[in-house]
Length: 206
Image (cartoon, rainbow, N blue to C red; front, side, top):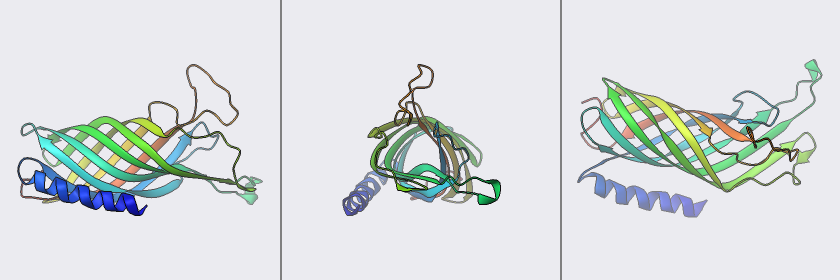
């Protein structure tokens, strides 16, 4: 983890120098809520951290492109409920370094964004009511997702961002090993809520 923090700081310094000449750079941090489609549990019950840096380029008054490098925690969680005779417990934690590449459209204080995301799996943890799960099928190291969101400028360079992402390809096969051509495996579904700060004077609200 230390090497990722070091890389994050070096990249931030480098991008800040570039941004002063042509682009806008900023920071974002918040929470992710997620589920895994195909694990037999439903609900965005797994909370995690979502944050990193971004760099955007302005095409004109309405359109920008944004490149991000973020650390995001995804997965799934199900708590047992003895009152309903449900003794199942499940926890899946997936830590990714993710690079979303987004096209953004600005309308007054709102920004609408969409584009692909490219994620690299750092590590994973999986537990059930019996403890750690070691015999599960492995996860793919790379994740490709589709992302869309809405950002609202609340004050000068500060904005709040809501975003949804869904894996375009499976993150691993179903635990049973079954395969169906129309649904070949498990996928991440993520809702994230972040606060962003953009450096410089060329803020979206200006």
